[in-house]
Image (cartoon, rainbow, N blue to C red; front, side, top):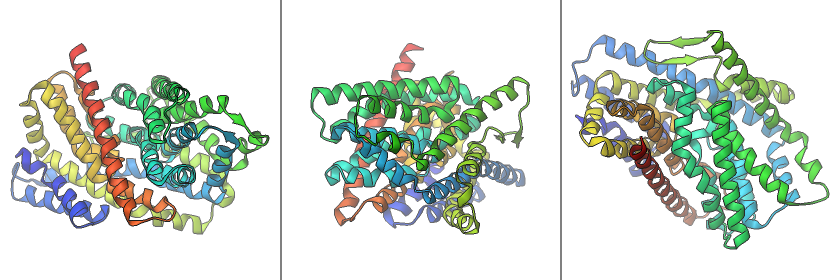
Length: 475
C-alpha cells in the first residue's frame, strides 16, 4: 500500500523526465492515476464523503496559493513595465565589487530578495543575465541555481504557510522550525556561490563567511519577530547591505540605488511588514478571519497577496490597464490549474488512507529512518512538481504524522518542507525558466543546468540529514 501511495509521484517523474510533458499534463496524469487507485479500492472503500472532503480541501488550498500567485504575477508584470530589472542592473554596476562578491550580491542578495517577494523563479529572469555577463557560462548557471536554493522562503514563504496548514501547526513556530532546518543551508550558500564564481582568496572566503552569517541571522531574526513571510526578504537585504557597505562605489551609486524603478520593492517590503503587524494585533484581539473546512484553513488577512496588491496599486498604479490584466491571466492560469490538480491528488491520497499507509511504513523504519524517509519524500515532491507548495501538499501530511508518533511532529514536517523547497531548485520547470533567461542558449546548457541542479540538491539534502540527526540526538 505504501508503494501504491507513491505511484502518482512516480507517474509524474515518468511523464516529465521520460516523455517531456509539462507540469500541467503531469499533474493531470497523477490525478488520473490517484482516482483509479481510489476507485479500485487500493486503500479503502471509496465513499461520496471521501471525494467531497478531498474536493473542498483542494479548493481551499488552491485558493490559498492563488491568492498569492496571481497578485505576485501582477506585481511582476507591473514592475517590469516600470523598468525595475534595468534599475537593478544599474544599481549592481554602481557598486564596484570583486567578481566573487558581485556574484554573491546578485544571487544571494538580489536573487533571494526578489524570489522571496515574488516566487515562481522570477529572480532568475533578473540574476541570470547579470551573472552571464560577468562569469563563464557554466559558473554563471551554477551560481544562479545557488541563488534559487532558498525556495522554502520564496513567494513570501507561501510553502511554509501551506505546510503549517497541512501539519496543523501554528505558522510562527513552524517558521522557526523551518529556519532551524534550512538555516545551515543559508549559512553555507555564500561560500558555495563564492567558490562556484572562482573566489579562492582569503578575502573572498572571509566575505562569504560574513554574508553567510548575515543571511542565517537575518532570516532567523525576521522569522521570530515578523514571521516567516519576511524571512527571505530580510536575508537578501542583509547580504545586500553588508556588501554595499564595503563596496567601492561609483560617483552615481546613490542615484542608482534610489532610482524610481526600485521603489516598488521597498513599498512591498513596507506593505508586508505593516500587514504582519496588523495581523499580529488582530490575533491578540482574537480576530481571525479564516475560511476552514474543518481539516485545512485559509487565513485570508494573513495572505501575502494582500500586501502584493496594495504594493502594486501604490507603486505601479500607472501601469494598470486591461492589457496588463490579460497578461497576468495568461501567465497565471496554467500554474493555478496545475496547483489545483496536484492539491486534489494530494487530498485524495489523504482522504483515501494512502498517506496513512505511507506513514505506517515510515514509522516502521524507526525514528532516524522515518526522519530520513520524510526528508527523502519531501525532496521527491519538490523535484517532481517544481514547487515547495505542491511538494508539501503531496507528502508533508505523512511526514507530520510520522513525526507525531515520535513526538517530533514539527521537526519532521519542517525537514520535509525544507527538502521540498531546496530540491525544487533542481526541477525541470526551474531549469526551463533559467534556460529561457540565459543569453544565447546552446544544447550543452541543458546538461549543465541539470548536473549542477542535482549536485547542489544532493548537497542540501545531506545538510538537512545532518541537521535532522543532530536535532534527534539533542532532544
